[in-house]
Length: 421
Image (cartoon, rainbow, N blue to C red; front, side, top):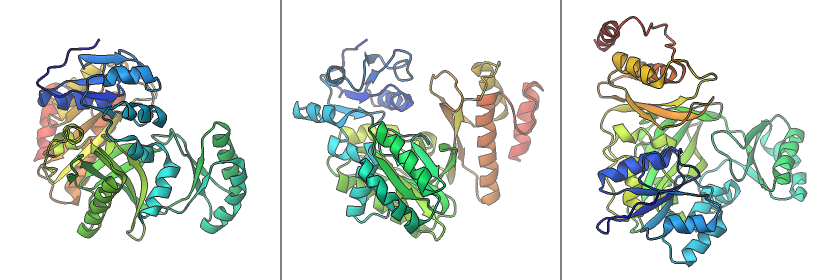
C-alpha cells in the first residue's frame, strides 16, 4: 500500500521495515510527516504502523526505485543494501543519506578499520584476510598479539553474529577459511582487555551541523546488548568529551548524514578504541526516546532533511534502557497481561514494544527508566535492578526476585510505593 504524500510536507523513505523504521515513523508523525518504508513483508514492525509501505527486497534495484520515487531522501533501517545498487540510485539523482561512500564504512568492517587507521582514530590491532594467500600471515599476527584472538566476518554480522573467538592460530585459520569460502573477507583482531563498552552517538546534517548525546555504557551478554546506562557512570569528563569529539570528527571525515553510533572499547588503562560504526538509529540510543530532549529518531529525520538539529541534553541525571529479549520458551501469559502487572508494579516504566513475534533471544522491545531522583551509586544500582526485573518479566512472565504477580494490584502498588520511600 502506497499512500499519497502531502505536497506540503517532505517525504522520507527508509529501507527496512524493522523496529528502527517503526520508531522513526513515530517521530515522523510528530513532525507532521509519514515515513515510507521498504519492508520484506506486511507484518514487519514498521509495515504494521506506516500508511505508506512498499513490499519488496533491499537487494532489488526496482524495489529500491519504487520506495525512493518522489521522496526527498532515502535512508536506512539497516546497512545491508548492496553498495552498487546505491551507487546506481545516486547516479539517477536520488538523495541517499548517508551517502554510499560513507555507508560503506558501516557495511564492511575491514574497509572501516583501514579508513579509521588512515584518519588516526584509535583501533585494535588487526589483520585483514581477503584471499587464501593471506591466511599465511595469521600465524605472525597471532604471535604478535597473543591469543585468544577475535575473528570477524567483514560483512553482514550483527548482535554477535559473524564474530568468533579463536583459542589459537589454527582455529583462527579455520574460521577465516569458512568466511572466505562464503565469499566474505575476514577481519582478525586482538582481543582487547576491556573495562567496559561505550557508545558515542552523534548526528550530522548535510549543512555540516553536528550534535552529540552523552556517552553511554552498553552492557553486553552473549554478543547482544542487554542494558544501556546514560550517561556512562564514572566516566571522566575529559574521556567523555574525547569520545564525543572523535565521533563528530569521524562523522565529518566520512561524510555521514544522519545518526552515527561509534561503538567504543574502554580499555583497562582508560583509553578508547573504536570497535564498530553504525550509520542509522542505534540500540544504544533507544534511551533518548524518554531520556533526552531530542530522540535519536527525530534527530535522524532532522539530519537527513537538513533541518537544524535538536538539543541532545539529558532530561534526568540517568536513564537506564533494558532490551526485552524473547525467552527460550514463550510464556503462556499474554503480553497484555504481562503489561498489566508491570505497570501495576512499576508505573514509571516506559515500554516500547516492536510488534514482533517472540522468539528466543530476539529483540522484541525495550524499557526505559528515567532516574529523575538518582543521586548516587546505590540509586543507580537500584534503577538498573528495576530495569532488569522489568525486562525479564516482560519476556519470561517471571519476577526474578520472587514477586507474586497474582498477589493483587493493590499489593503491587503498595510494594512500589514502599520502594520509592
